[in-house]
Image 1 (cartoon, helix red, strand yellow):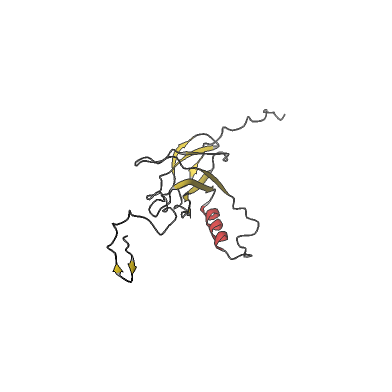
Image 2 (image 1 turned 90 degrees about the vertical axis):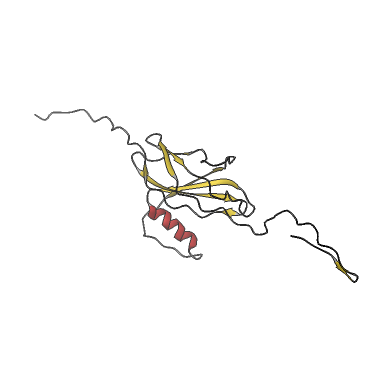
Amino acid sequence: FSVRAHNVAGASPWSLPSMACFLQHETPAQMSAPGLAETKSSTSLLISYMPPANLGACRGGGVFEYELRWARSQAALEAEDAKDAAPLGASGGAPGVALQVWRKRWKAPEHGPGGSDPPVLVDGLLTGRGYIFQIRAVSEFGAGKWSDYSQAYETHPSPPEKPPPVTTVP
């Protein structure tokens, strides 16, 4: 923008244009659904992700953190969204049904040109089970929208336990 002064004698010439600046701030763009980089073990998965298209800097704020959430079903993630959107004091969901959602946050790596960021390790999972993931970026202006749901990624099954000794019946 340019400015000029006014007084009783008239107006000054316009100033030189200023450097571009952002006056409106927004959260980072919605990210793509996370992918599976590797099934590490029977209790852990390595999840890949791409940074948001604008890195949150489109309107003045850079991404400084990522948040990943996962559950055994898409319904659990949807129920968490519904709970967050419900008026204070409202409750819902099927009685007695546990819809557990886990979360993990970490500092965003320095963003280089193009490519994806290093994958994130998610451990403490149940063996041979599938999990659905979502991710979002966080900047000084807040968290972006959750990504679309990933497909279900499964941990390796664990080997069976040793069977009891065989007994014969006469």
